[in-house]
Length: 480
Image (cartoon, rainbow, N blue to C red; front, side):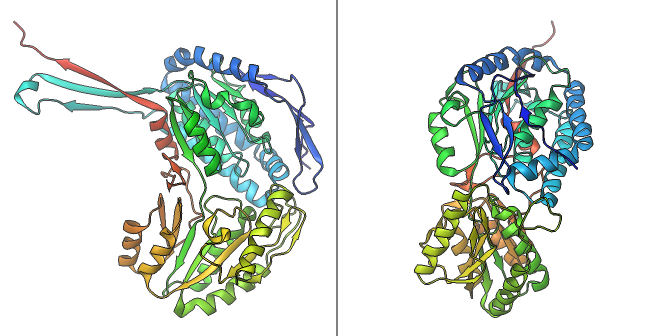
C-alpha cells in the first residue's frame, strides 16, 4: 500500500530545504492531517527570485538537447513513480484514484510534448525588400527566453496545471519560481524532487509553498518577466493589476455549457455529460455547468441524465469504485449547497442529488434555474449542473454567450453547418464538437475569452509566451 511521507521540504534554488513544518496538508476525505510541509517566508521568496535572475544566462546557454534530456528524465521518473503521484493526489485533493491516475498520465504527456518541442524552437528568414528603399536588406528572427518566470498553480489539477507552466519553461530555458496551492502542494514538490536529480543550473527552479498574503513578490517583483496564474477570475485580474510591466498569462474560470441538438446520440450524450459535469466533483473550470437541450429530446435526455447521475458511487476517493469524492473543503461544499438553495427559492427544481455531508456533496441536476441566479451566472466549481431547453439553435448560442465567461463550450450535433456556426459565433476559447467542453488534450491551445483569461496554454503556445522575438536585419552591399 502506498503511503505518504509525513514531512516535506520546499525547494530553493534546486535544493530541498526544511526551515519549518508550518503548512498542514489534510486528507480531504478524512479531514485528518496527512503531511506537514515547509512554508516559504517572504525573505525565502526574495532569495529564490534572486537565484532565478542569476540563472538566466546559464539557462540560456543550455543546448536544446540538454533541455530535452532534463524533460525526458522527468518523463521517465514520473512514469516510475506514477502510483505514488496518484496516491498523493488522491489524498491531498480528494480526487478519486482513477481520476488521479488519469492526471498523472497527463503530467507525463505534458513533459513528453515539451521534450519534443524543446528541440524545434524555430525562427524565420524574412525578405525585407518590399519596396525600393529596402533593396539589399534581409531579416532573420529567432525566439529567446523571456527570463525569470513566476508561476501560481491551483488546487484542482495540482500536477497537470503545474506541468503546463514548468515543462514549457524548461523547454525554452526560463528559470522559474512556482507557488503551488497551499491545499495541494505535494505533487509540485514531487516534481521538484525529480528536477533536483538533474544538472539544471543552480537557481533554475524554486518550488515554494506560501500563504497568499506572504507571496506578493510572485506578482510584484520587477525581476520577474512573466507571471502565469491559474485560478479564480477575481484573484487573477487583481494580480494582473499589480503585476507591473511583466507579461501576464491568466487561465481563469468558466461556467461551461454544452448544447445537445435534436440529432445527438443520446446514449453517448448521457455518458459524456455525466462525466463532464461530475468528474472530480465538478471542480474543473471546463466542467459542464449548463446543459442546453433541444425541445424535441429534452424530456427523454433529462430522464436518462437523472437516472445515470443517481447511479454514481460517492465516498472514499481511495476506493476504486468511487466516482464522486469530497470537494476541496467543507466551506466550498456549503457554498455550492447555498447556491442550489437560492435557485430553488427562485423556482428551480432539484431533479437528483442536492444533499451534503461535510465536504461531500451529491451529484446534483437542477432545472428551471433563473438566468440571474449565481448557479447560472457564476462558476459553481462543484458537482452541480443545470438543465435548460431551446427550440432554435441560434438561441442556444446566444444563451451560451450570455455569460461573463468564455473558456470552452461543447456542441453535440451531426450537422456540419451548425458545428461551423458554433465555431464562428460562440465567444469562447475552444469549441468542442460532438463532446462536452470538459475535453482537453495537453498540446492544444487552451485558454479563454472575456473573464476566463488572457493568453493560451498548451505546451507550444506557452513556450511562445515564455520567449521574445529577437530580430536581425542585414544590409548587403555590393562587393567592390
